[in-house]
Structure formats: structure tokens, C-alpha cells
Length: 140
Ligand SMILES: [Zn+2]
Image (cartoon, rainbow, N blue to C red; front, side):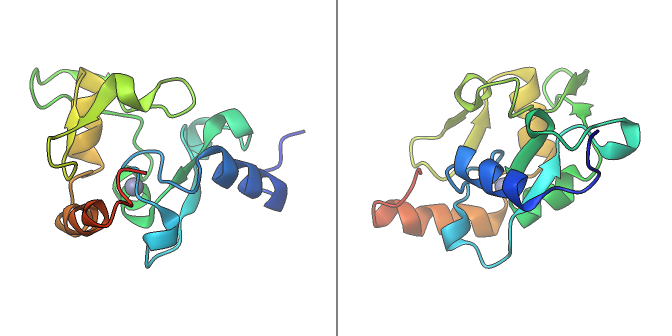
């Protein structure tokens, strides 16, 4: 039987697995002012289960922008593509940092759609990355 709510044990596992970083924008929970969520990659309302292979650690901003979306438009081609799936895909295959390590660049249609939809380069994140990079705490 699958529990509907994320258990404390699942939450601990998800946080450890993600090294305390948002699995979308790579923000570190230890430098965040808002708590991180354990989110359902495939939302429960479309049948997503509360199982470890459907859970990801997400910062407040990414979680809010993702909401119940699982696909979005690729801004380059205009095609609808799946959003990044942290359990089935590798971050570095879809994203890279710019030379200043402040901007996330989508490398694939999924990467570009996820950068755009989850707003992975929110101004406050870019500012935080700049400061953390200067003190050697970014990228994680
Ligand atoms: Zn995030």
C-alpha cells in the first residue's frame, strides 16, 4: 500500500539523496530562507505515487512554479516537452552553468522548458549564486 503523505523516513531519504539541494535549481537548503518541499514529480492527482522514485527535493520557488506541471513549451522550438525528471534524468545532461556560474542554461528541449517554466534564473537566485560563488560555496 502506498501512503498518500510523505513519511518522515522518506523525507530524510529524499533530503540525503539530494545532498540538501533543490533538484531543479541546485539551491542549497542551508542557505535558503524558505523551507524546501519534498515534491511529487508526477502529481498525485494524475496518479503519481508517494514513492521514492516519484519524490524530489525542491526549493519553495521551484515547487511553486512547477505546481502540477509535468510538461511545458520549449522556448526554442515551441514544442511541448516533458519537464526535467530528477529520478529518470541527470541534471548535467539537460543543464549547465554559464561562465559566471550564476545562470542555468538549458542544454536540451527539456532543459530549456524547465529553465523557463520553473524560472531557474530568478533574480534572487542569481544574486545568491554570485555571493556564494565568491566565497567558494557555489556551485554545490
Ligand atoms: Zn529550486
